[in-house]
Amino acid sequence: MKKNVFIRMAVVLSVIFMFMTTATAAYPQKLRSSEERITTEKWAMRLNPGQNPDELAKEMGAENLGQIGQLPDT
Image (cartoon, rainbow, N blue to C red):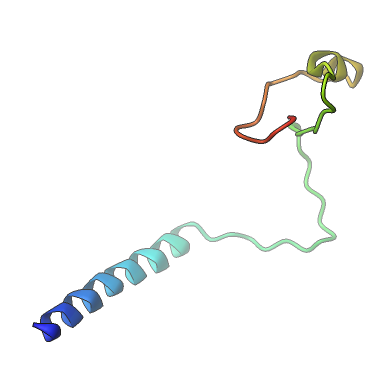
């Protein structure tokens, strides 16, 4: 009985390992140096309580796209 459990665990772990290696090979990620700059058009800002996000965005020439997920004060 213990041998069957061990074999099943080994098979499951092997399948998981193969899936992980296949997934990372399919979507390789380029490593960047800390010196490389990336242009972005979207930003997150932390606001003080009571601060109007629409007014702040307007002052900066931006558009308020709303809160980001569960991040507080954004």
